Image 1: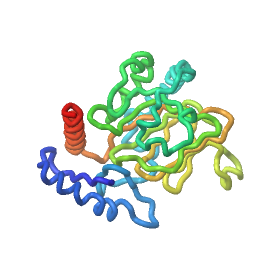
Image 2: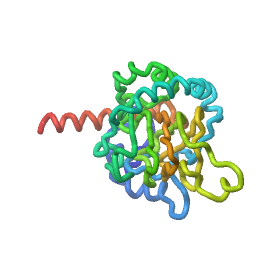
Image 3: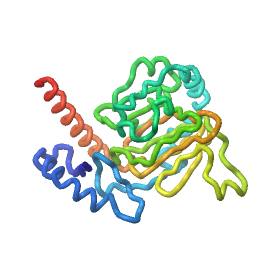
Amino acid sequence: VYHAVPLGSATADRHRERRTMTRAATIGGRLLRVPGAWRPAPSVVGIPGLPSKPWWERDDPLFAAWLPRLEAAAPAIRAEWDRLRGRPSDYRISDSEHAGTLHSSPEEWHWATFVDGGRVVPALWEECPATAAALEGVPGLMVGDMPYAFAFFSTLRPGSRIAPHTAPANLRLRFHLCLQAAPAASGPEAETSRPACGMRVADEVREWEEGRCLVFDDAYEHEVWNDSAGERAVLLFDIWHPLLSPDEVHAIRQMFARVQGMADARRGGA
């Protein structure tokens, strides 16, 4: 069930919040699910009317102060990924946002997680200082009271794919810093055929380039495939949507903290 979140002041009363959620399916259907058009369609919670687009450009002025520095750290981050790639994945398919509907086997998609549902994973943070420093330098990195916030080394095995899906929320932008991928297609064939390793967001397909970021809004339908002979590896991380104000981010975090508090209280009383 889609929930539309109203954004007023950070202290909006809870009655208004509950009343809005009872109308969530209708509001979400009218504003975010428009037949025949590519629109953000978050599966759980979203902000109607938040300006959006499927792909963001890496040279957008919003990222100019920090993205070049992060990309310059790619070789050091790649070295840390190399050290971890042979370990067991910490991806739990049953606990993922999409409950195992995206691919046929957890072995297809390997994770080494730095931020899990908003919670920093201290052991990996300490073991990978170059990656940790790069993430700490990202303004608006999603951490804290936000269950849909992640950062991890994402490795897609050869012959694997992630089925079309949408994010649970439209509150974030997702970054892929490419650490390893098949070379991008070039020449006449690139214009007519699907690349061996790529990602579609809405109706546009793009390929990864080592040392550079792809930036997208994963509330739009997207899918990923790797039909190449090698692994595709990225440092994946989420930032708060840059068109949310600080007050709005604060209000959203308070909402998620209250929801978590109620869930904890129910478990404690069971």
